[in-house]
Image (cartoon, rainbow over all chains, first blue to last red; front, side, top):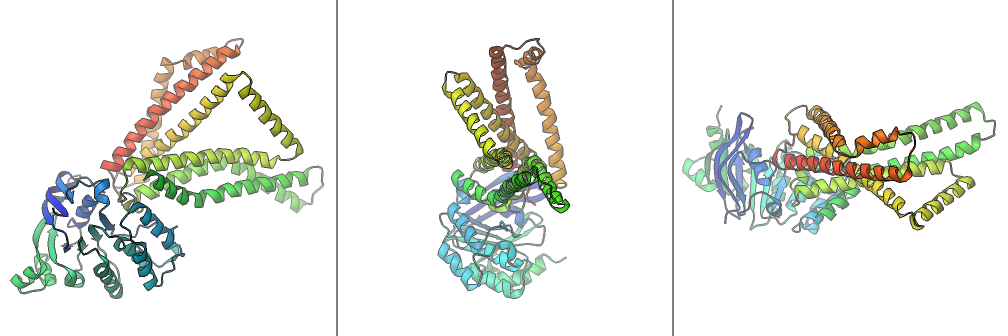
Length: 231
Length: 271
């Protein structure tokens, strides 16, 4: 059974069509790049999978389930913006995630926090913006989830932080799970991707295994992306 | 999962509400000391000014604590479910119903605690040997009333408290519903929420005026103008009013709950 399946998926905001008849099938155990320019529909697709939005048409299934309480048990979601309660500290946050997610691995989270020398007793509002984002990523990757949905995990961070984020994703995700990374910064993530999906103006432009695409085109995914989305 | 949500909701709200309650009680204790200092003593002007300021602070606090509690609960709902934290809360494996109930129950608890704080603050302000005697007599009278054959009075008190609890739940739900509808808009979300809340108030008044015609309320207001009041007849009317009010509050709460659940499920529009 595919971990994520979309059939004729549509989402409109008023008269604006954010997704227009999207068909995608993603199997378990793959790292997938959801690649497209700003406003192409990446975040809308991820929000639909999380049940944060309701489709205007078509359907979306997570492990065969419509988005809801059961599907949320297997999704680990990193929003594109920092949204942790700032009055909490990392220790309280681990308690929060541990209470609601049976697959949360507290010792893994503590290990990652210790490697970054983040004091678990310091309130999040007293951490730097970069460290708050890292704490959020750590909470997401410390779960043994079935599907990781990472929305722009490397957007707006410096190159050193990008390396940390990608290494954290690669070394902590559940190998039987799928990871969907939404981004427009292709060069940085290309090395970790098994599959790529190009999306533009709410439509799927291309979906292919990354190696196959490189072989067929004789170019890197980043170069193909630049060609496809040339202004 | 509702229990876990309530646990975290209590933790999140107590770090703002407990200092407010503590400050109110501390002001009451300081007020008590001031009353004793000022009573029959000729104080220097500076001390008199401080005493006056503390007393003003106390009375402002008594009036403000209810409003502050409502504001904190409304802000908590908005920030936790309709702004950035909503990305965390709405992706938890819990139902929308559990989310709403956790907020409503914890809000009702803080409203009750705010009411208890006001009573406790007044007691603390006036606390002396005479107050202890008055409070003791009051509890003794209440005990007698509740235990010695005047059972209907106990029932009236319980019914009245139940109406107060229902009113606080309905009030929470009306704020939550207005915020949920207002935040479904793309822009000016708070302005839209206020407009929706005013709309709910108007709807509520229309419903109340219809209900008043259908219930004992109309007769009751006429009855109050009567030249004499029969206590048993009054109690019958009063219980009728409480029952009608409870019914209206349940209807209002159910309507607002339905609106909140619908908009959180189908029309969520996080920034």
